[in-house]
Length: 142
Image 1 (cartoon, rainbow, N blue to C red):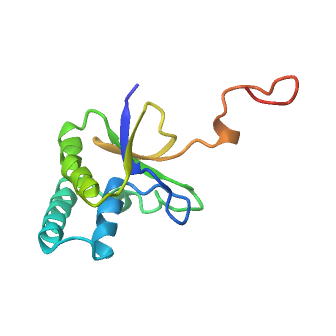
Image 2: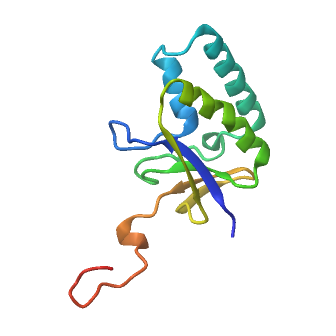
């Protein structure tokens, strides 16, 4: 079974979501918090990433659709070494600006709605759909 890695905000945004590393970095730029040099760097690495890796929405436009795929989020394949190495400087940028982030690792990211060689987009498991245990006699789950 494959393993997947996700880097995301350590705290939810105002909509209760945990934006990923690229959204966080781009948010810093949109908020005007980057220096001119950081802004140039971010534009360059974003262009490089766009040229090297498929944007899932260009293949499956509805992969992030809130109705069909609520809460869908991207995960990197753990063996996508070059892509994971590219993420390091983004994380350093977040650290420099005091943006808390966390790394998640799983073999079960949820219901996969898009997959390519380096990433998946998956709808997270929900309690009702994914809880692996039956209710106890008292009606409480373990």
